[in-house]
Image 1: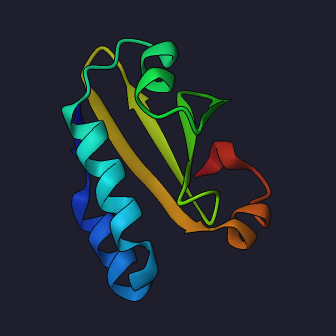
Image 2 (image 1 turned 90 degrees about the vertical axis):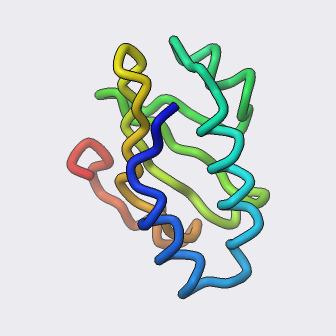
Length: 98
């Protein structure tokens, strides 16, 4: 999969160094994957939930962090829309607007 954008991951783990290893691991696994549907995503990274409107929430580092993405399976692209900790995620009012 083509991940857009690695820079967003890097900016996050530079501010939150304890997230670096887990986010880099997610990036490696996702960028090597060939996802055609949600089941494929789940086989690669089982800590993911589909939340509607092509949005998927990945639990990172034992649910310490969450990442909201939009996946376009046909185009083999993953857009990283948001990264934050569990508390920040719980304050999101409407995930469809991210």
